[in-house]
Image 1 (spheres, rainbow, N blue to C red):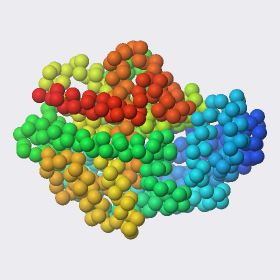
Image 2 (image 1 turned 30 degrees about the vertical axis):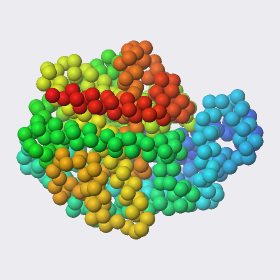
Image 3 (image 1 turned 180 degrees about the vertical axis):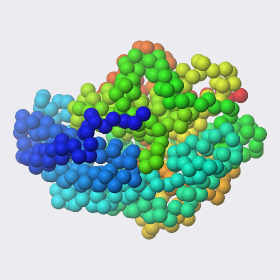
Image 4 (image 1 turned 90 degrees about the horizontal axis):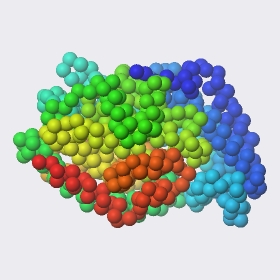
Length: 570
């Protein structure tokens, strides 16, 4: 199944695409920041601001999705480049309004907050105000937007295009990156070792080129920190996510303090494999015969799991299949990985997969459809309150995976349940512990970049040290493993996003605990979290479900659940 993008535009030549870009530019150019001084006029001003954003983002959304399945197609590349330039032009026309809002005199700003017609934008207004100390002049903001086209955005697109051309030969087959990564879970040790050698050998060989990309995006971020007056590399992330830097630091340190759980699990796995240590080629080795799950079966399992929780969630997820909002299988030129593009309140989400007909791919399907349900429900919000704040961004996705596991556990024998429980622990390691390890790697690399460009060997060294801290003495590494950093796109596309997976995982464990305690009475609270979008802060949204994001109990509860899973392994 390939997705149908016609709900956005019929083709790259669709005249509506150019029309929307032109209208967005006209709208953006017509906004008068002086209307902010008159709350009644500000109502209409923000409506037109939203309309300009929507008409600019919709073509960019289409171009990005079109490119994602055609990374080597000249038409797709040209479209994305052209639309990205036009989008930046619109964003620059909006800069005067955004700067004026952030620097509005306090009395005028309070008048906006108190105006009844802007009540549903109160949280949005407060968030914008928080950026005031780091907002530059209109001209400087415009220049930074323009710089992004040949800076961070350009390097991000280059990385996607360049790595999208990678091919790997295992046996007689030529594979994409996602296909060779899937073979690291193959039952045959010989296949796993060949896949490991191909994947990490390629990353090692390409490290000189990919390190140049990493150096460029890290320097771009360092320049932004300096220009905007941020004192800590996590400060923009904390501001974006409406948490404190100390909250992020507490998460990182609490997780590192529990690294021993990772080492304990892999010592258990080594015993199951009959070895003293787990060879790195066997980190993802199945512990028993893992079922092959064709896409149609995975689809039925996920929909059933969703339906057991809530008919509303199942109904929404089913639309993705019935209306072809999903692109399923890997193919040449298609970008690797999986994602859900949230779209707009006036459109709908799209999901990209690279399904490989195994249990892991079924979990990925549940994960991305969880995101899809989240964005779908958040469409109840207006555009300025739409989306999912980073601390809640992974809530629905990871929760969906646990719902799938609950269904599978009901259907399995005792030995199969042990294997699935081990899978659940490994998923926690990947979603929580490894993401924190990634954050430590990113932070150390960024700090080192201040002194000059890092060589591939420098990146290798930092990666090797952080990976060693996480796994302790339970894993036997090869020389090729030190190049794994080069194959993690989050380091190129985002700054410090990986920590949010860890935070989101702990949020999910807390919410899942509430579900176990309250049963069906919890479902409306959960749906309310997803429907809230960004209309309130993450702490306020979670508080309505009885979860205190900043409490010590929040951390201890999550890690306690993980310890219980580990102790349940025979």
